[in-house]
View 1 (tube, rainbow over the protein chains, first blue to last red):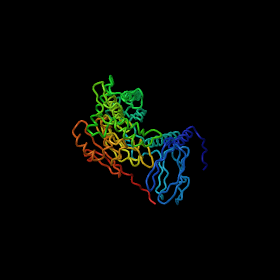
View 2 (cartoon, rainbow over the protein chains, first blue to last red):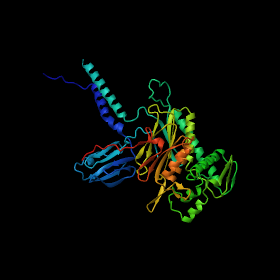
View 3 (cartoon, each protein chain N blue to C red):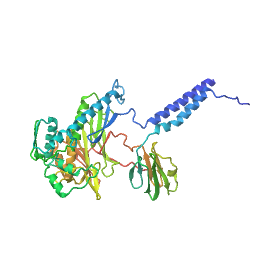
View 4 (cartoon, rainbow over the protein chains, first blue to last red):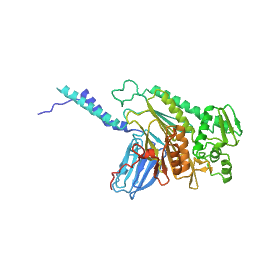
Length: 124
Length: 367
């Protein structure tokens, strides 16, 4: 049996458009420029200013990381951890998100203030 | 038939789209709790967060409808109010009432009665705190000038000279007249001015048509009204040992929280941190077992002034003053962070609904 040939109709076009739009949504909604990133390691946590480009070496749980800040984004440039997932994670800063290295208990977070969303004011 | 299929496919994809959009928005408070704006005055950052419900909201008490035009005009009024106080109370502005008083003369006439009333109130707090809070430290703060670029430790002689002009009893006020028994005495309202201005601002907000709100004013926070969702406002207190963290939370309504600590304004010389809060007795940065103290009070100026006094006095002073003021209209509660990182609470905060300690989020990471 021969399958009937189908042409693209205007409905198909709309459908494709909607699907593309849907796929692009996460990008639109997570986009936000952060000025700070929080790095938590096995030993404690620190805040990094993303305004100035910099690079530094960090140790966590016996592993070493070269962390770079450039153009308002932070990423792991080099590491001696076994899986290397952190090196392949996209930079965060311009978008919210986290870079995580499980073996080293390292986490770099941008844009999500940990459990403080219900606070009305911080006094300092 | 085909047409029907296509239409239903379209409808389905729209449903997917809508559910995805609502997913993405769930992270933000919905609706926005506050209309907020930030401005700078009195050498600090001031954030005003206001909520005003308009129209019929009886069916859903969580629904907020902000009248942005009205709220932004109210915030503008607040900014004007603060800048008026700034030009009257500033020690560094040449044409302020305080600069006038700090001239080397003994009698002053026709001064702003409101400023003199504030100085009088300050002197009453000085008496209460045995001089741990004292607005006549002007010569000392001027000498150290902690926030300037080239801040340095002054010589012992110059500190002694500056301290000799400190003493709230050297100032007498009567209506619009002020007399200094020591011509060189200088007034610095840095430890009470912001709190006082914040109190006036909250008064203004209470009188306006705003339902509730919260204002951050340097080391001071003031709240008014009731939140429909939680009733009380949750205020986080910064950890003095790691300012990216908090030590915990207090819950307030129609109250003020004021913090005194050294992590914001200080300078470091030879590994020693010199803070901006001075012990009026020694003329040097105050050192007690308290590294940060938050004071809760219904009176904003008192909250501000007492936080400075308690920072100078340490935990023993907090205990004494707490007993002395309990039951008065300037009673207070306090959260003090001590040198070893532990937290001292006054009685009223140690029970349920008082201070909530910050707990590290549990880590699920494994090697």
